Image (cartoon, rainbow, N blue to C red):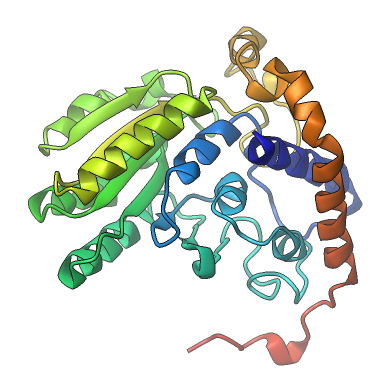
Length: 299
């Protein structure tokens, strides 16, 4: 629960800082979807690899990425995990198995499949996890990745964070197919968690699927229904845009673990606040990159 609260408060601190222009990156906030990331990552072994999306703050933190380095990266400072060059949408912490996120929809899915192929060739028990949104299932590389993983019986867990939106467009407006049934046409075993706010169910379900993969049952496909509270990109609300309504959000707020158990979250508040302020102070003190840094890490 502490990690869920930490992610929520980090995102809220980013919202506070954003108008000051100290954050030098667009932000796709994880508010509302934190329990999914926490549940998934709670079940991963340290050696398991995570490939996620541009809405990746929650996964970066839940997998164990450095919070000071995250804040410095958002500030565009040299103390960031990528020296201030990557920004919010391209987070990585390979030391804890967070292998990267990308601004290109569905682009990390084949990376996860490739890593899983390498794992199989090495006869390791490592599992690769591909996180993607419902919109990613509309990309060709998604279909190719599911096919390759099923064909070669690869140790990969596909996780669809289904918030039913691609920017401002709903599922019904975009998809003539049903994602779970479609995944099953590749011979994949599929599972659905209806309430992504139930982080215990997400964690237990993930643990079961990982055990199946490690025992040789092949790739698994998991859909977790969830809901983003903020606009597609940025710190604001967008209910005036007309594509969704507050009644939907109210239904998700009713099961939001941060709001549902205030006495539990209160016990972590001071510690979480201190951790966040230390990270902000680190970002503030970090130097901007110089011209000499421009071509570093470029091969």
